[in-house]
Length: 223
Image 1: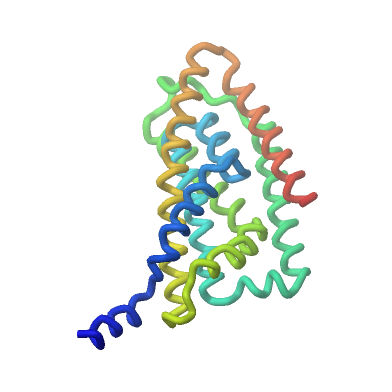
Image 2: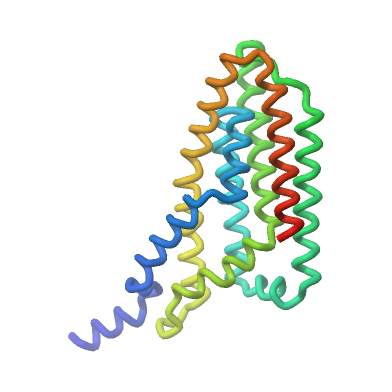
């Protein structure tokens, strides 16, 4: 019996003594306001509930890409070669500046009743998902964070460290979307309510979004 129990313990790919601290840390990290949450709230407020949820899905997709990079050991390249880090960082800055310029130049969106449901659901939703995913992927700080954070909750004594990283990373992605998705949805509701009381809402929110994107670009460039 003791041999069987020992075998079960050894074949487990999760150290349950580390799992629950990991879950607590993951939830705390996700709910803390940061650039990803600011981006989700901005896109949800600007384009509506579906776009807010899509932005949250885009952030989760970007995080999943970073998890794969970490599991494959490629994240060490960013830490080892500063040029890779700087290259990713400045691509991210350029993309955020592009989003800012696009927001400033965007035409005001017509009221919901004046456009087809297909257009409402398709264009802003896909654009929000793409913007959030690319912004997250091009943030090298996320790579370094995963490189430092996830290994703390693995147990080399159990073996299968890449698999442990993959499982923890998948859980982190799920936690991220489970929290950010509702935030994006509520941001869309908030934006819709403001739009009902303001004739110039679309133009104003475009300008606010542009300013936020510029601030995010400045933050990424200087940190």
